Image 1 (cartoon, rainbow, N blue to C red):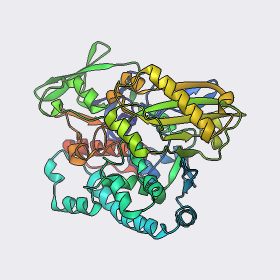
Image 2: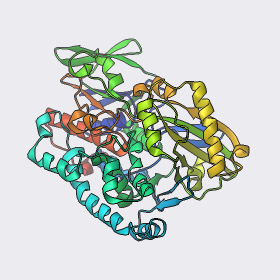
Image 3: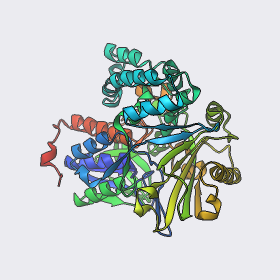
Image 4: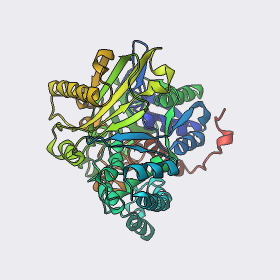
Length: 493
């Protein structure tokens, strides 16, 4: 079986990993010079900083999927971080989040006295809902809509209070506004506003406490690099600088593709890319392919090479603005830059010597901004300078004089790379773009053409996209009438 994987992001790579483990002859086509998609590095003057995702969640899911796909998960070394991170508020409050329950209770008792029982209730309720939510929504695909609207799933939806937003659900537990933000802002990890993201995604802040936040030694992008090594060892083919511009079809099936102007025939096709952009490969025809979508938030990203150390002990930290609600409104509704944004700072060199040369430090800064083209490059450049001013005020008073170099990435570059309207996380995780309402594994209406990635069910975030690749492999296995292979008989070394 000759299988083409169009796009070398994590969804395409894990799909290739599964399918190569099951006898497919897999070729991965990537239009850029390197594979990995958002899992890539910014490398400059001996610095190496993750370009995209930095917060590693659900490590057991990542390891389990690698193992199921026949790869030894031990090649990826992970380190657990506790405390998770602090949130610094403009009024001088700092609230540190912990995975350790007793330490988290102690922190709440110190900063938000009287909220301890609310936290315990939150964790108890979410613990019960996590497995039910995972089984009902993440572990299944909904190509047949009826499989979503079963009595069991509807009961689970009600149990999860999916009709609420993540922010409103946090209000059911916590009375302190800062604490509500601390347990709802994580929807930004997948590009959604806490006010518009359904409560099923409350499982993200819960997961931080239950399963922890981890760091991949060498950087998160090493995950993609190790998968590529495994694929090449198996005889798979990785073709970079190879842009696929068309999937040729006949009789409701894909027959081949056009890559760099040349036609090549394949039996099965996996398209890894933001679906609203990728659907042009098949002509974008048909009722399902004419649907409009709302993009996730964009990101203004700053990568900084620092001479010396930065005045912080934290790998991850968040600096909150005065008005997170107003910030979210500007990002998702008004489509403009907010005057007092919240932002995230990642300091990998605190725990990883490979991130920066000796005596130097690496910094990564992320600011949620609107997707689309309503903000100019000049405005982003000015905004980046304002963020550096805020960092000098709130992080390190001598930051600017320590900067050796900086790179800036905006939604404009993201759009040029193929991300839908420059949104960093696929389509937004809103109610009617989640579950059965999100594009499924075969959104093109073609028998042998599949899709995977952040815009496809079950959604964004590295482990969730990997889960989507697992569902895709199961669907192809079912179609071919094969049984699931035993990992011990596969490629595990």
